[in-house]
Length: 236
Image (cartoon, rainbow, N blue to C red; front, side, top):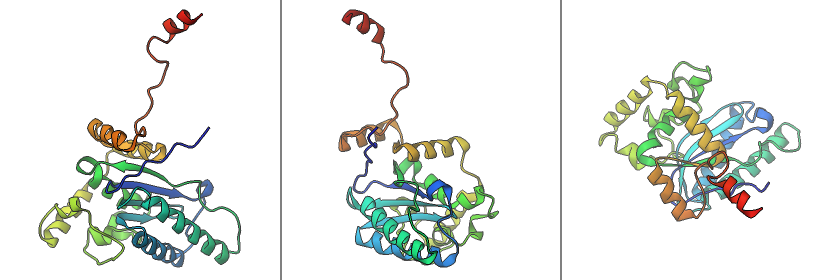
C-alpha cells in the first residue's frame, strides 16, 4: 500500500512527532539532547521553520512549528534526522536505523488547538510520571514559554503573544493554563490526527486545508458506501 502523502502548507502550524525504532531510546544523556537541539536550531533556521514548542523525551520528540513553505518541515526533519543518526551511531558504535520510519505530523488550527498543543507537548514529562510539574523538566520549551528564559530556538507564535501585551502578565497567564491536565478526549484526538496525518481543527478548517492542498485530511468513513448493494445488483 502506498504511503499517505503528507500535507504541509506555508504558514500553517504543525504538530510533529518522531520516535525511536521499536520505541528504543534516542537520547542516552544530556550531550545527545544538546546535539539534537543544536541541529534542530540550525536546520529550522536554514529552512525557515519557526519552532514554538518542543520536548525531548527518552525515545521520542515533539515539536510545534510553522513553516514558511510547504517543504520546510520535511527538509528540516530529513536533515536533522540524518545528522543525528550519524552522530548517534558514531558515538555509540552502532549501525542501522534509529527512527521509527518517517516522522508523523498534523496541521493545527490556531484558534482552537494551538495553545492546547503547547500544553500537550510541554506536559508530556508530567503525563509520563517523570516530574510533577512542567517546570521541573529541563528539556522542553516550558522554561521559555512559561518562565521567560531566553532561548533563540523558540519563536513565539502570534497567538501565544496575544495572551497578554506585557511579558510578565503573559507568562503568568500561560502558567495558569498548566493548572489542569489536557483533557483525555483531546489527547486521543491529537494522537489520532498526528498518527494518521490528519488536520486538527473544525470542519471549516479541514475543508479549507483540503481545498488548498488538494489532499484529504479527514478520516474516511468506515463501512460500504450508501447504495452499494443496489449498484452491485444492477451490474449483475
